[in-house]
Amino acid sequence: MDIIKDKEFGGERPLFESHNLRLENVIIREGESAIKECSNIEAFNCRFEGNYPFWHVHGFSIEKCFFDVGGRSALWYSDHLKMKDTVIDAPKMFREMTDLELDNVTLNDADEVFWRCKNIKIKNLVLHGGTYPFMFSDNIRIDGLKSDSKYVFQYVKNVEIHNAKITTKDAFWEVENVTVYNSVLNGEYLGWHSKNLRLVNCHITGEQPLCYAHDLILENCTFGADCDRAFEYSTLNADIKGAITNIKNPMSGRIVADEIGSVTIDKNIKAPADCVIEVRNK
Image (cartoon, rainbow, N blue to C red; front, side, top):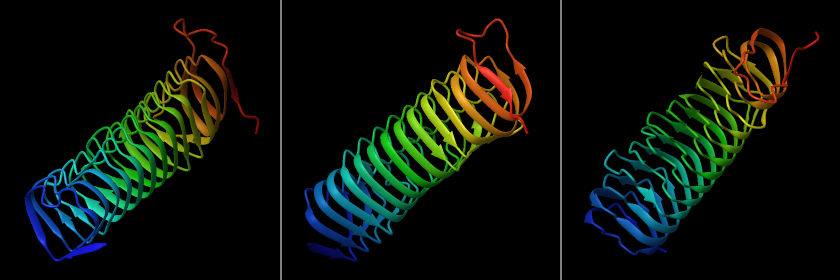
């Protein structure tokens, strides 16, 4: 493997079609497509300031690197990436990619990141700001997530999340086959129009959660006092620890809680309208 150390590059495609190359302490200055159509690339302790540095790259690792604001849309149409201990200030990262492994990565502008990606494994990720992270992505495994981005995990499939703290709005809309364990989910309108969404040992806050959901499962979950009009037009099996403020017009299934503030069943309820709602015997 060739090694380039302590160098700077700028302009258009300075390392185009490079293969079997290791970059150490390299700075990519203003320009475009610095590392395009490449394979077997290692970047260690590098800084990326120019646009679109990693496009159509096959097999690469990025460790202890920094992507400046100018390094936007840096990782597209690529595969087999391993990224570790890296900070990203640029938006629109990770697009149309497969086979990603991330460990201890921070995205300080998480606008439109991880779009249409497949086979993602993540440990300890921070998402800050921006909208629609993970849109249309598939086969995601995450352990350790802190996010205040808006509209996270919409239209995703086959997702497993552990130990997350998500503060957002309209999270997990139109998802399919998603399980979330041991997490805190803060925000309005959680999980609408979802299919096979399962929440285990989670704390949920925000108004009108989990409406229009199909085959929703809750296991040992808790709700904040602001969670009113929950489960409207949903089919579900919910085991709720503690109290829930208000349940409205669930379609079918079973809801059990330690305490239920109120239940709203009106003429607008949808068939089969046979959901069992119970207060647990103590």
